[in-house]
Length: 292
Image (tube, rainbow, N blue to C red; front, side, top):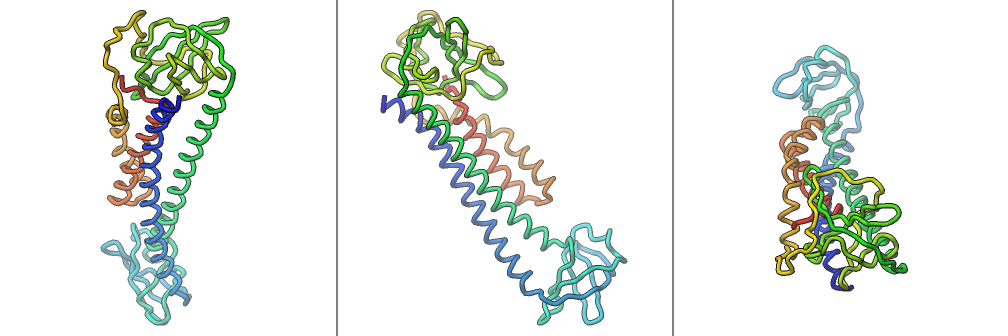
């Protein structure tokens, strides 16, 4: 049982670790950027009211009675000719900001990167911990013998193993992949603990979700009534990662969409693409992708 538990956990732990590492790196660089921007803003203690007189090359020229400055401001042409509040460094009036200028946006964006990274890391850890605790609790429950059939269902990019459980009320239980599933006869009697954890030929197969009473959607493939016992089932972490690689495909598109919404350009695209990619790998592991 311990060996089967380690096999079931290894995939999820690897994917979770990758997400946490990426979140840490993103949060670190975001925090460093936020700290620099906050330090720059903190030095601008003087206040004035002035005019935006011109815009060129991604910056506006602002003037007030005691000075003038050039302030980075995307799409600043729309505020030319308007009055604005100005914050500037009294020791160097050329260092100034106005509401909506790039420095404010970059500060908010950096703080958002920290917050988002921490939220994703906490969500991933919490979801994994809850799934693990439920599985362990079910594994300790009393066992009943039920007749099951192993099926594979493909829905979108996801391929999962399910146990179709016979009984007065037919149920479908999604399970994490284990090589023992490949050569499982159909139907076959197995032990079911807590309604969620199956023991098959001494191997504990853990649930990758809650049982459902309605046939799950997807293209179905049933195990043969008597599978060839010599069939070589995919094993190891490498097989799982190869099948999960399909979840990397949408990542650049997600990154492009995020960069467009956030206005963060190439850096935002790279960051969002990497985060989306590792979350895709984690999602495949969390949902129980099947490499067979």
